[in-house]
Image (tube, rainbow, N blue to C red; front, side, top):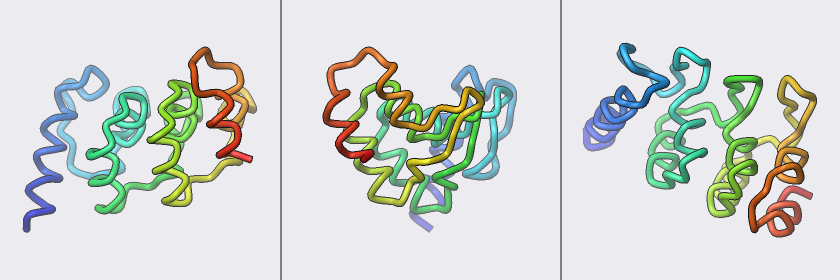
Length: 124
C-alpha cells in the first residue's frame, strides 16, 4: 500500500509539469502530450528518488519518447552521471537510436557538460 501511495503522489507531482498539464496520469508508462514519460522527465531533471520509484513500479526503462529519446539519452545529454549509473544498473539499453540515429553515447559526446569522459567510459 505504501508504494501505491507514493506512486499516486508521484502521478500528482508530474501532472503539474508542462508536459502533462491537463492530463490525468494513471500509469507509470503513460506518455505526455509530447510523448515523454515521467521516467524521461525525472531523468532529465536528475530526480533519483522518482526514477527508483518508477522503476520499482514497472516503468519501461527503454521506452522511447519525444524524438525517440530514452531516459538514458536524456541523462547523457544533461550530464547526470548518477542517473546514467542508475539506469545502466537497471539494464537500460546503450544501443537504442533516437530519430536522428544517435545512441546515448553519441548524445553524450555532442553535449556540453563536464562529465563527458566519465559517461563515455560507462557506456563503452
